[in-house]
Length: 260
Ligand SMILES: [Zn+2]
Image 1 (cartoon, protein in one colour):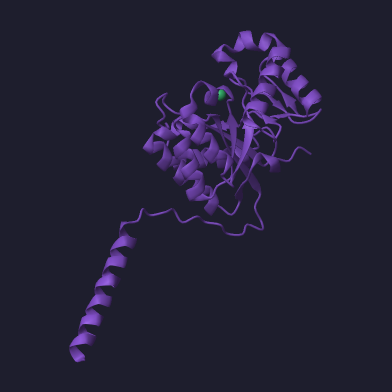
Image 2: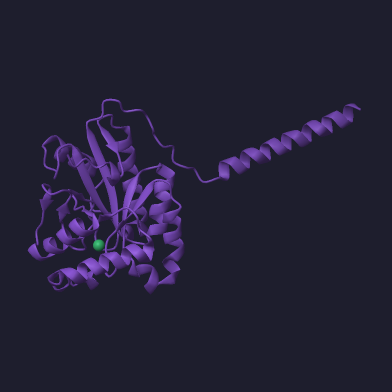
């Protein structure tokens, strides 16, 4: 009887050790900081352009790990041109922390000046992306142009042709067109150029000095292809933690952007 009990105890001990080993071998997930911020002053809107691309897989995982709201400006033609990107797009549609927004169908074929000369084509291009990707948000970002059209009063552009097309999209189809205040630049191969702390300090400085398009709100631009770089994933992760930990800053989706 005693012998039997000892054997059972040993078996339980072995199972326990095995379970601990399994636990230790699991990849460590990030512990998100979701603390209440009753006195926050600044709204930070993270956005990423040009998806779905290969980097979207990593960005999607980062969004889930950090439980961070990010508005995604997508290019319709990407999934038509490369069906391998379809699963990336699907994972975006299933991600509860994102809003899908419109970054045109063709991305102007990267020939911006020519593209913006014909405003009707620009509008048709955006509408094609909307139907291809089933985008319902009516938020747009113009490829290669930092244009804002949020209301009849809030309009800003660096290109009069593009502005004409943007106005049409806004007035006829109810789109809000978002530019950006600050970009997390990369070196062309995805690697972010500055540290998380430098970006965090720049974002805070711009907000404090009122150097954003509207007061106390900052739109941050990223690009999906950046996230193929592990270094970029780490830096953006750190930046998100810094912002989540800051009582003055709240991360939001563009649907919460104040235009009044
Ligand atoms: Zn783009």
